Image (cartoon, rainbow, N blue to C red; front, side, top):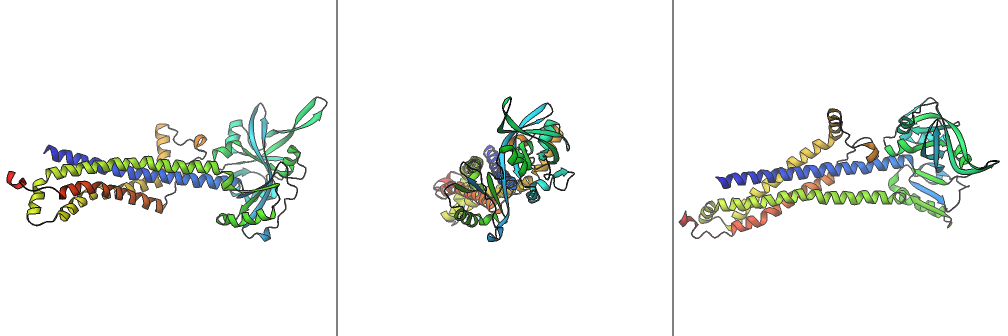
Length: 395
């Protein structure tokens, strides 16, 4: 009786372990998939797919014939620089992107969530800021701020940084903490004035209608800007370190969480050995009435596989249900217990993104079932090779 009780406990631990392992793998991998996609969309939402720069120089000839490139949606010649922003008695460092006012309408990530009173909030001596930055400095639409450039001008009192007084004409919310707290937009004319670039720009950003065909467009642009002074890069190259780190993190997390399934599989081995020990008489009887060794092995393979397969199926359902409701679960826990799960300051975005990939779920399911079946092979083989001489006689 004790052996049967122990067998039942170990079998339940095996089932629960596989269920938790599969569910955790699906949840974590789905979150990491969503995290990558969300960051990718927001990074590209603020920046182009292809960047054209000139070594150590600004670019004067930045007009391109879009009709020659079917895949180009729009072109954004701009200037991006660091600046000190002062508002009253408060100040902070910001990243300033100076673009043409006519281009602003193409930035959907800004236009979809912006509070402004103007048709074009950049067609003036104005500035757009993120809502987190506005809250931090206590600013609102109509507030006056001053930008300080790294460029200097000569005065009777020595060299002083160039400054520009600007009115906040709009406050946007991108959902990405890094941009909402540090990113600002001004007109290209004001940017050129602050950086002494005249009528030049520092970067030409190419936004594509179909990012999947980026290689073909990049090749054509590289041929057009074939001078050694130009550098043509795509967004993958510019952010390669960041996304490579995410890729490595996903692989490591998968390996670590897979150990839960492996540990549960060891419990399956243990439970089968106990089952073999408890059922030696039954095995001997079945062998005596003509059941082959392979038949015995198939029986124990089936018994052991049931635990793994059922745990995998339940784990998949649990993982799927939790994943699609993860943001609601986070909100409930934060509200009920005063927690701060998934803070946007740490994870860059303001909600938990998820992306359940069917191929990945199928891979996890197959991996779990395969491990569960492999764990049953040796105990099942041991049961089939059990010597029955003397077992019934001693019974």
